[in-house]
Structures are given as C-alpha cells and as structure tokens.
Length: 598
Image (cartoon, rainbow, N blue to C red; front, top):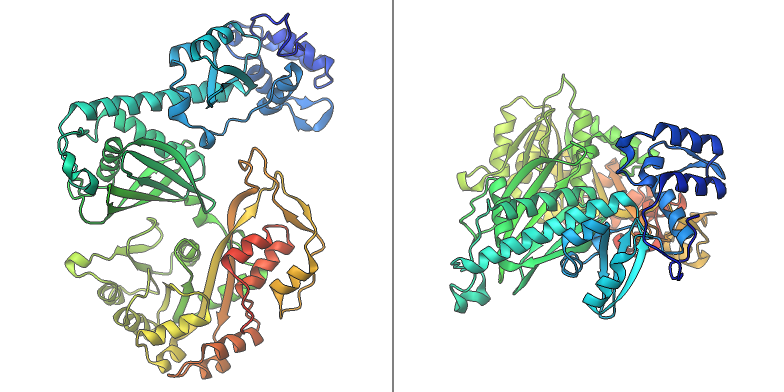
C-alpha cells in the first residue's frame, strides 16, 4: 500500500507503480474494479512505461466512484496522493515563486534526475515540490549540502516537469546574459545614476540567444497568467518585471538592469521602434500568438526614467471583440439604451472614464457589431489599439501633422457612415467631430471625465458652443471596471443593511437576499477574484436635458434631470452586480465612491 507516513522510519526510496496506484484508488473507493482493470489492460504497452502513473490514469477522464459528478483529473489524483502519503498538497503558482532564489539551491541536472522542484527558500528550510514522494535518497544528501531543513510537498507531475524546464531555463538565460554584460563595454547614458561609472557595465545584443529566450518566456507567461499589461521597470541594480492581472500589479521577476536594457531593446526591435533612441518616449505594436495559437495584439510604450527606459506592453485580448454587451457587463436595460443610441444615423456618442476603465473595449465591441458589409466604418486613433479587418483604421502621426482634426477631415472625404475618434482632446478635434455629425455621420469618441454629466462640462470647457452640443450629442456613457468574484470559491454573504442603504441612497433598492464574498482558492491565486466586468452610467439626451445645457452650465441640474429620466449612476449599476453575486461592495466603492450631492 502507498499509505506510509512521510516521517516513518520504514520509508524507502521507490517510484510509484501504476498497478499499485490503481489498487489503492479502488481500495479508497475512488475507482471501480472494472475501470481499474480496463486501465491496466489498455496501458500495458511500453509507451506508458516512462509516464507518471497519475498522468496515465488522468488521461482516461474516469468518473470518481465516490462522487460521480467529479472526474479523476490530474489535480484530483494529486490531492488524493498527498492525503494518502501525509504530505501537504501544493498547486504551484509561478507568480508566487522567487525563481532566482529557488534555482540557486540546486542544479537543473540534479533536480531533473529526481524530479524535484524547489519552490521556496528561507533561512532555515527549502521547500521542494515532488510527484514522487517515495523517492527519498536525495533528502539527506541535499540537507547536508544546504545545511537547511528539507520540506516536501506533493504537486502534479506535469507542473513539476514543466516548471523545472521553465525556471532553470530562464535562470540560465539571465545568468548567461548577465555574464556577457559584465565582459563587454557599455555606455548606459540613459541611467542618470550611472553617469559616473561609464564603462563598468556591459552592452548586450538584443538578438543574443539568452535575451531572445527571456523575451519569449516573458510573453508566453503573461498570456498564460491572463495579464493585461506587462511592466518592465529599470531600477538602480535590479530591474523589475510586473504583470497587471485583473487590475492588480504582481511582481513576477527581477533581472540585473543591463539585462533589462537588452530585453527592452529586443522588444522595441520587434515593435519596429527606434532602438537607438532612448531619450524620447516611443510607441509601437507587436502581433504574436498565445500558447493556444490565438493571435494577440500588444501596444508598446516606452518612457525614459532615472535608471533607463521603462517599457509597458498592453495586451489586447482578441476575444473581447466577440463578446456581446451582456458579457461586457451591460444590463438588459443598458443594452437597449446603448443599442438605441448606436443605431441613430447621425450624432455624437461619448464614452468617458479614466485610463484602464474599458472604454476602448466598449467602442471596439460596438464598432464590430455595427461594421456590416453595407456600412463603412472608419476610425482615427492615437495609437491604433487593435487591428480589426472589418473597419478602416488610421493612426495619428503628429510628426507629419496628421492630427485627430486633420484625420477626421480626411475621413469625411472617404464616404464614411460611422466614424470613431480615439479621443477628443481639444477644440479643433471637437469641432471636426461636430461637423461630421452635422453632415450625417454617427461619431463615437472618448473623453476623460468622472461621470456622464461632467462630459458636457468638459466640452464647454474646451470651447464647444452650447447650442452645438444640444444639436449633436446623443448620449454619454461613463464606465468603470470591477473585479468579479471567483466562481470556484465565492460563498454566500449577508450584506449589512445599513451599509447597503448608504450605498444605494437615495435609490430604493432592497437589500440583496444573497450577495457573495471572496474566499480564495487555487484557481484565483487566493485573491477571491477572477476577471473583470464593466459598470455603466448611461445618460441619454432628452429635450429637458438639452434645455439645461447653457453657457453657464449647471452640471448638478443635468445630473439630477438625467436621474429623474432613468439614468442610474455607477454606484447603482455596481449595486446590481453585487445583487447578482458578481462582485462585492468593496470593489464598487473603489470605482464609484459614495457621493449623495445629487
């Protein structure tokens, strides 16, 4: 039997045997005798000899005999093995592992020989993940060499094997690149604090095989972790790599600053940017593929800092363009209002919100649905966020005087039906947008304002006459993104009645009978959240609201009138998401703080 306690004196070193594992699964009631016999018969060939027993069994997708609703997946089998052998179970989360630290305690050859993966190092102990808990001859040997306690946890064999290659491969590339940087001459004039140390660092070739490997790993890793942005941030000695996942930044890795400089150069080269120019900000774009072979667009932006160039890569998920409005977070009523506005033949529709609030996603998803064969959709953007074949996109280029205003002027001669303007930043752009709408075009654009009513104030502030706003504006959508609760671990939660009334006041929205709260599990990295969804405030223009648009604009009166006519503020849209168990009050209050000055 497998069931030997990890600290037992009789423990000996041996690899798990498939037939014995099957017998124990039957004995524990997780597998029927018939299924076990079937697996034995079908896996008797040599091709299964080198495969881990748990992987072999998991490939059959067998039902759990004790719970027919569950399948004996690799993770389920690994948890069973951990419980059977008395070791803690570990789902390896690469974001929480200090790769540089763990790869320094043992060589790759040694770790691969025993299929052990170091995942944590402290002053007193080293934690190793293994899928072979009875292979034990390495324990005393490493304990004596490292002079630390060896702690074992059980992880699934696929993860152990995969991260062994990835972690040690990455570490090898970083070390190789670092050694080259130390041997070469380097004038890093971009780093303000190194001006007195010229010639002491090495210059790395952006096409060096180590740098190529690091960049490839970085991009693939970001796609797997659902990152929306990659931040490459140079520091005095060690540069940082951070991913933004569900709106929150996570530190992923640290590399020496000269290596980061080479990584940045490699990515700039891929984005067809000027690699030699490090003093001025630059923009670029890269198109690549995810591990699932899906094409992904990335927008690149560099910024000179005290320690070198900082690079941010924004990753655009192609799947957002095939999402319908309900999937983006629109309620049924919101969808009807938005569809009604976007089906008008002419006028201006504005989408407002801070950077990173999902404005681009809303516009692109809308244009994708509007871009029918009989409709000519054109856009002028700075920069083009995602390349979409179903409409015609033009990028602003100030260096040749191609501005938003001149771009719109060009589009007007291109027989468009619908025009999308990346952002209305000044009076000239606003005037051209109004001109386009007055000549029979539907215009969609963005502004940076806090809510829908303040968009009107913003237009007046940049100099747009009030009567032109009255004549052309169809509506304004203000939006934010909130994190959604992890569906795997969220649990019912009773909302405090007083807090709820404070949130929704003065709207009379009853206390939700069943809200939910975050718990944290392996699927969501113990954050309790997975993914994000939009909350929206839709202001539709009416005759009464138009009357309130005056030179001495009273924003409060516009807001009050819009609420009378059915506009729900961001807080109430968020409250609906709480009501349906999608998010929490804390998330809503982050993006829509309580303000009852209506």
